[in-house]
Amino acid sequence: MPQPTGAQTAADAPAEILAAARAILPWMVEIRRDLHRHPELGLEEHRTSARVRERLDELGIPHVDGLAGTGVLGTIRGGRTPEGRVVALRADLDALPLHDAKEVSYRSQVPGRMHACGHDGHTAILLGAARLLAERAGQLAGTVKLIFQPAEETVGGARLLVEAGVLENPRVEAIFGLHVDPGLDVGWVGLRYGQRNASSDNVAITVHGRSSHGAYPAAGVDAIVAAAHVVTALQTVVSRNVDARNSAVLTLGTIEGGTQGNIVAGRVRMVGTVRTLDPAIRELVLRRVREVAEGVAAGLGARAEVEIEPSYDPVINDNAMVEVVRASAVRLLGEERLVVFERPNMGVEDFGFYLTRVPGAFFSLGVRNREAGIVHPVHNERFDLDEEGLAYGAALQVLNVLGILEG
Image 1 (cartoon, rainbow, N blue to C red):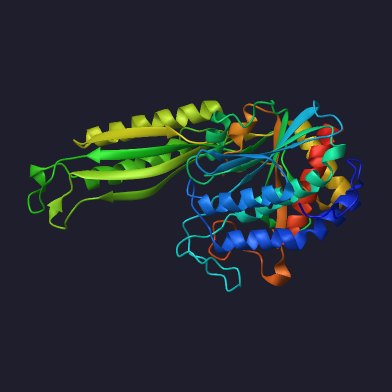
Image 2 (image 1 turned 90 degrees about the vertical axis):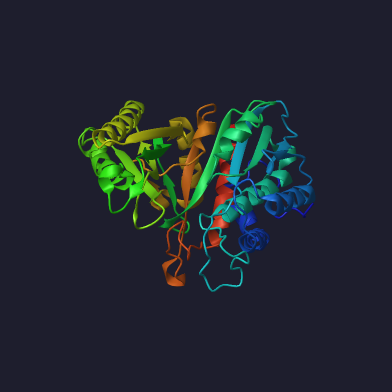
């Protein structure tokens, strides 16, 4: 296990914890850059998981491996009050199917794969927090669970780890997660009370027509024409069914059909997503998507088959847990570096699967550095982060843990 880098009591002042986090920053940067060079997609994070396990072994932190295939659960038991409260911290492991266009030494070495959402940073931050907490384990009044989760970007790995029991034995009482935010300068923190992210549902619509020779369209039913009318009509689902004071998004992201230019298409398939903030609006939009698609297609002699698959739960923060994060941020960075978001965003995050079972908070960690050109948004081929943010993130998570265990 690495040697202690700072004061070894749970009552450390925020400045001392930040100094300790900065002392291990090169270690966190090394971890982050290694993961950035070798990104892996959801449920394929075998190398990433192995690196996490190696670091936990170095720190002497016991862990359970292979959760949902690649997930890892580490546990730090406090020496002062082992039977005290239980807090969990979470990081996600997976990357995105995207080309890395940055010209940096740690550029992705895997074609078509990139850590474009900062999950490499999240993992390095959690390992940094684990190291700082392990050094203080003797003074901790409770237990800390370290959740390294696969597949946030794809199948909602949080749900899989909840089903695997990461919140039980012992039962987690509070959970904290963070997301790097290139919209905030490094050293800033963004909070949102209550609902932070939307829910999402996947929608697939298959329009069935009847193929015929392109010279004789009356002999068939043109699925492309029917699908075009369905696409146009679906634009009214939000604009003419949802109160303008509420929010909903319906996006059709793919459409494919037909086999050749002189054949009337017999089939067209469209796939999209619905994002909503309110359960009643969610039910309304999904019902109208089905009704509109089926009705418009039928009116043109075709048939629409609508498949709806619930995806991610909304992220709804517990306000008391947000206050814990706020207190940590103010003590560490000052009130002037704190932003409270006025509105939820329509993006989704599978952290909501934890929050439906355990009080917790999900917050934003600034990583923007304009002078260094680190300004690109997540899911962008030039996304990067100011690595100084790793130290702030680790220190904040340690303070969040202490805020629960010492509270």
